[in-house]
Image 1 (tube, rainbow, N blue to C red):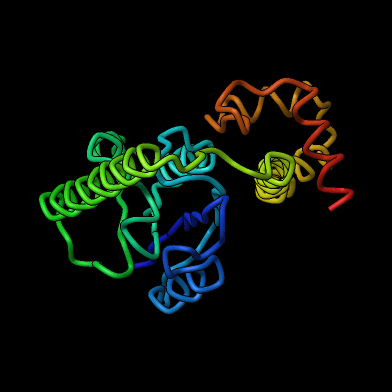
Image 2 (cartoon, rainbow, N blue to C red):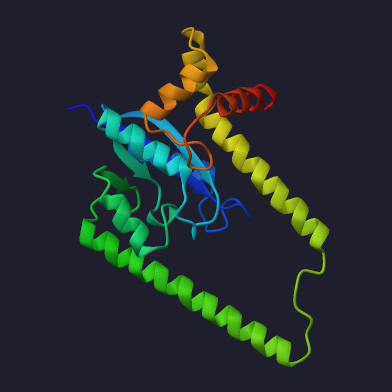
Length: 218
């Protein structure tokens, strides 16, 4: 029996592949996992921190999975989140999903793994705060000594996220435009499909136009 899949990838804004699995490696892992007659109908890429639960690309992937009755596939469980509540919300969405590194994991297993990952993140945060407190007591000046460089990196991260979002949605938007739909009609169609904007909001004509412009200059 044919089975449709929607792939979801996530990379860090700070350094792609910092967790040991970059975007290319994620794609290869998913490709190796899928075998005929399975079909990969779409791919979504998120560029942001794993701590954040506001994932517009993931929401778009879930919406498409629901509408096409497809299974969401990821390379590793930590690509989704390091937060128990987020995993729970995902599981309650009604979308079937599978992690390539744990294809036979059940819902209980996923909860346990997510809890362990969240605990590890909390412990790292506590150790970092303790180290900063000790450094401050010793007279070490805290803060970023190169704020301009940090600001430039932050802007680059924002641009990178916008480009990734554009490259993901531009093909569908161009397809709708080629059918003769106006920008406003395209926005309405995207909203009907439960596909949010990059900020998780409803589409308007101006957002549709911005995606087209960004994809044309990419």
